[in-house]
Length: 282
Image 1 (tube, rainbow, N blue to C red):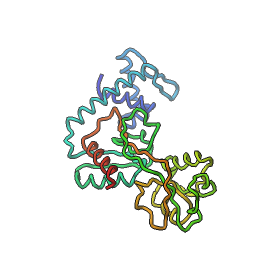
Image 2: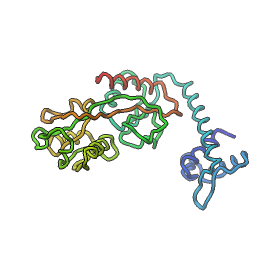
Image 3: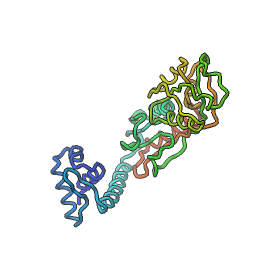
């Protein structure tokens, strides 16, 4: 068995498509098919079930792929660790909440370690790519990942002082007829808004959604509705014309890392800095 042969097999196992694997490695689809057949002949077992234009891992293939991927990951990690001096490299981060705090940490980190490249993607599927770090609220798709709590912050209702929505009794249920402003579908603030309102006995009437926190805050300032916001990470982001009414609920933010992926020294340094930024608010 050869390493390249095993890498092609594992990619095909993940993608479920010889064509996509061929495109990834820049070879004809027949190359991947022949590679898998030679591997099956060497093992003496079928790894894929073939039907018309589809290939599917069978039970033996699933177990073989799992074991091989563990070995390849360990090997890649050993190579990376041997070459890792901590002074240069890349850090890939999925940022699904607390974007401002993360970017503040990126700015500070780049001033200290200018040879390290930071790549961020916001509000995306954290399992769609191989991220070194994932900053997110609770996420059921990340079961099995290592995680540490970065932040617990109190939530509040933000409303314009000039709007009629500012005069309420502190009970969420009294906002049943009020339009809500929130982030886009799938974000933690959107989920929290829906969950808190459902707990209060109503479905929120969401009037405006935006993936940009600036426009969420702007809509609140213009009196277009109320918003559920985190007090710590959005502190100082509203003007004096917005009132913040604290809620008893909190939002927890976690830092996730994949258990089977080598974490570069530069990424560990970023973790330490981000943790300090969250702890001190600086």
